[in-house]
Image (cartoon, rainbow, N blue to C red; front, side, top):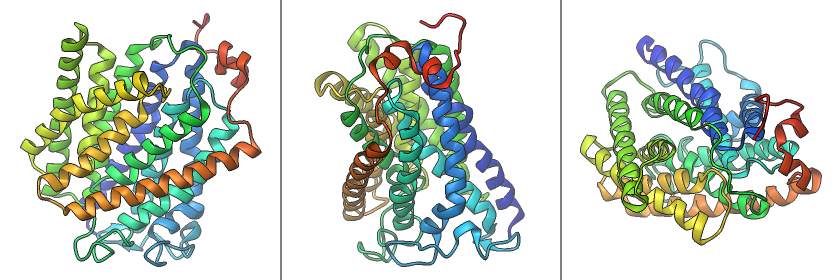
Length: 392
């Protein structure tokens, strides 16, 4: 065990949890109507609790067990055989488990943004739990757990390069989000602006800070690689914030607060897979392009395709993660075959599993709330609480 590595990953674990609670909750909560903000908080908070238990029970073993190239197996259920002295590289294995658990929390939590304001709470829990176990955890094993997409797998000695989750986190969550949006259909009223842009900015700021743990922690060591990952993460986020705002100004004559912070998230998602493989100049390019690319993806999905991915999960996270994964090959840090092939394999798998789970869980529990609940807001109708004295 290395003490410095261990200390850093303890901090990084806290930072990644901070991204979900309260960062993502505030970011998403501020974007919805006032009468739905508590339902968003509830979704993110309940997912965090449920994924933690499921990761202990089955998820960690599926992702990082000693199974085969496709499936990690169930040999490490409930951390069987792991104690305080067990090591994963230079770290206590229980710390590696906890760090990866925070990724298993935020990935299904990202999908929340696609279905807010109209989905059943029971469906959220059942779908998220099964999706994490049957979609996310196997993909983790394929790429980070020594599976068939990693080094020595189907792409030869050099497998796919995905430092902190462009494919594992952002592509899977983004594709699941767009598919569930299609099944749900659009909201009854999409014209309400974000009820609290201040929440959105605060949440985005927390995500920006927490992303240092997300990307820097993925080095799994306290060294120069972690320092570079943090630096390029920050540069990409800053560049995308500015280009998103500039593109808004060019197109609409004004730059919005919600826009600039959404650009931040686009830059962070885009640099995530590449953060361990590129330098600051490449990060500047990745972030600069991402701010415009993801904004145009929002316009395509929302206005041209008329898909109500409520908070633009696919356009920002999905497109950003896919773009960053491809840019690894552009900058020569990974092979084109491995990057594009892995995107395709994981993409098809995610869509198939997500489709089956949506159809299956919808048989057991209601997918969409009734019209009256949707119009009046989920906070009071579903959870018996109200965020404000008068909800708009």
